[in-house]
Image (cartoon, helix red, strand yellow):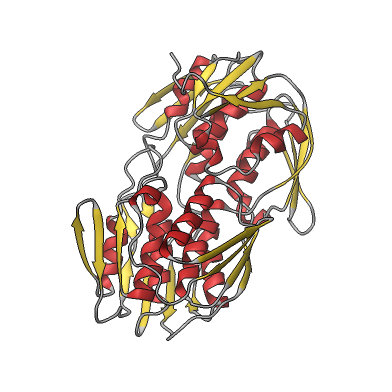
Length: 431
């Protein structure tokens, strides 16, 4: 186990390249199971979540080659329909294997998935969707045993959950439906760019998907899919995290390459509303950000895309902690996603959390302290706060960061930050 040592107060400046999207890569990698022909996927980020997914695919019998951000996967006939608990338990997104395994093999056995602890993330919508296509579902010994001996048949399925459309649920249903008989219509579909990227990948494989990016997606089933090449979209959450870093008071301004302006609108708009400078190049693939002369407090209400993403509220909370005035963050997607706030308070932040809402009163400065990451985005918020804090911060349980940020410490060093990894002999315990 490792921890990150951050020496605060160093000025940030320079340019970094944004990696491919972790959240787009995972279902795309899983979708490689839909064909027995090789697929080649570029800009797959080298993070622990994608590594776990590739390990699962190998365990199922797929041939996996990885080199310099490119992954080649071949899934010949005879691949296993049962995934290992030891791999699946490590990653909640392993549920996205359900759709392609059912489409390809008409049966699968999947352990109930694991992952981070930011609140209840049930799989009932995934199971309801596959049942609507004609599958039978049993839960036995901690495993989901799912079978469709007569194959899957297209139908209309509403994917709305209690907190809005489900992204991985939409992904799973799309992947299951591409080889189903007839036409499947997904109502209340997730509109996230990662869903569109998966649909584009599937269409390159020969699928017939229309409407991705809207609330209604139509999939006309085909008999088989073929291999293809695809480049993963930029990671909008990594880009947003670095944009916040560029707006912190210790920044002289930074530039991010390999971004997509269209995907960043809600994040960019909020930073501008809070008085910061955000400037894109003409084609929207590069953005420069720097702190505003008179930063202002702000309000966040998380919502499904194109609303403000829940995956960016923790990072903005770190910025609000040093912004004059009172800021309010309400998370409608995961109301329990505020475990970073208690750690920010250890650094001197003034935050009150009640019933899914954080009220942040800006302070003049933060001080370094030992803190503990509780999930992926909370860990990013702690890194941002540590960069601006006076003194040294120790961030324990660094494995959370490695789930979704490729070479985060290397990129920060390129911008002038002082960060280093060391063994965590305390085992992540913070008193």
